[in-house]
Each structure stands twice: as C-alpha cells, then as structure tokens.
Amino acid sequence: MPGEPMTTDTAARTERATKIYGRGETAVTALDDVTIAFGSGRFTAIMGPSGSGKSTLMHCLAGLDPLTSGQVFLGETDLSTLNDTALTKLRRERVGFVFQSFNLLPTLTAAENITLPLALAGEQPDDDWLDLVTSTVGLVGRLDHRPSELSGGQQQRVAVARALATRPDVVFADEPTGNLDSASGAELLGFLRHAVDEFHQTVVIVTHDPVAAGYADEVVLLADGRVVDRIDAPTAEVVRDRMVVRS
Ligand SMILES: Nc1ncnc2c1ncn2[C@@H]1O[C@H](COP(=O)(O)OP(=O)(O)OP(=O)(O)O)[C@@H](O)[C@H]1O
Image (cartoon, rainbow, N blue to C red; front, side):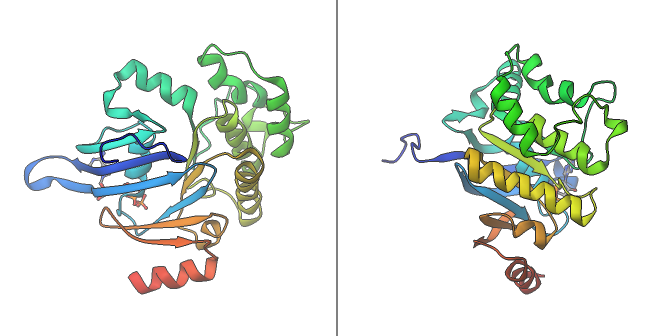
C-alpha cells in the first residue's frame, strides 16, 4: 500500500536520494534521484566510472553523509529521523565497514581490532561467533599479531572479521581489494561471498574491477549519479561488456 513501510526482505534502500555538494555555480550533483533497494542476504557490487557517485551512495546508505533530499532506510529505520548520537549508535551496531586502506588501529592486536566495535558498543563478544568468523577468514594463529606484523591480505581479513563481529545488517566495503594483489583479493572476495552464503550476511561493495563484481549476486551500474543498469548473476565477462557499451 502506498505510504506503508516496506516489510519485504530489504536490508537497505534509498527513496529519491539526491546529494548535492556545494552551492551555486560550483554545486555538484553526486546522486540524482536514486531509488534503489538492497536485498537482505545478497551481495551487491556498485560500479561505474570515476565520479559517478559510487562512494557517495555507499556513504549515504551507511549514515556517514546526509542526503540533500530523499530518504535512506536501513531496514525499517529512516536515517533522516535520527540525531547524531542515534546515527553513531546505528553505525556501530548495525553497519560494518571495510575500507580500501584497511583502517586498523596499529597499537591493537588483530583480536582487539576485531572486537573493537563490540567494545565501543559496550557489548560482550559472542565467542562462538567470533571463533567462526576468525576461522572463516583464516586468522586463527594470527590473532595476537599487530597489523604491522601482518600482510596486506591478512590485515584486510582482520577488517572483514571486524566488520562481521557485530553481525551487522549490512557490510559496506569501499574498494576492499584495491590495495591487494589478485590472489589476496580473490581470497577476500571469497570470504565475503561465504559470509553471504553461510551467514546470510548482506554485503554491498564498491569496485572498479569486473572480476570482483563477478562474486556478487547483482551489479548496480551508476553514471552521473543515476542508476543506469542492473546486472543479475554477473560474470566478469558480462560486466566488462556492459561497461564498454556504456563508456
Ligand atoms: N565532499 C565532497 N565535496 C564536493 N564534491 C564531492 C565530495 N565528495 C564527492 N564529490 C563529488 O561528487 C561526485 C561523485 O563522487 P564519488 O566519490 O561518489 O564518485 P565515485 O564514483 O565513488 O568516484 P571514484 O570511482 O573516483 O572513487 C564527484 O563529482 C565528486 O567530485
């Protein structure tokens, strides 16, 4: 029914989302009236040319950046109704992040980095869950190491385990394989895929890489701040072809 909150299996969605940076002549429309839903337990890759609005969409979905107009919902929660304290709490408890640059705290061990979101939220770790997550990403035996004692691939696995620690509604990953060699990148994408298949985790990544997009259930293609294409069950070849058609 019109106006009813969506009760379908949607983890996150936008409704006519517009984001304009700056004002007047220098204003940039980074998102232009985007209405899109991300299904629960699905792996979505956001793609598109540089400057097409990929990071902006992800940041707005994750409550890191407010919209100029329109709405973002995480589950049933309309982010525009939340004050800063409530938004911070939502990000801590219901959203997981993986960044291109790992963003681990150098003085903490891998285990401490992984449980940091729980500590910040004042929650007790669920040891069985953390054991499952750390063994899934192959970190058992490395948990006492600090980031500087880990390879890039291992550091990013810590970041993935940290993102999964709170069992968030959505894990957002911005170019998570951007700083990894292809073998470590493939391994990392395999872990994200496993989290979707085995833990019913919802994952949304931004990537430029058609091979990375091939791990997703769906590709959302942006251009000039708009959704211009969606590809179901993408393969790297199909993604490459569709990107060429649009370029
Ligand atoms: N904080 C900001 N202030 C002003 N303009 C911004 C800001 N952030 C992004 N933009 C502009 O908004 C547009 C979309 O940027 P965004 O970073 O979302 O694109 P992207 O698709 O993620 O690009 P890339 O692939 O290069 O990372 C660009 O024109 C960018 O210059």
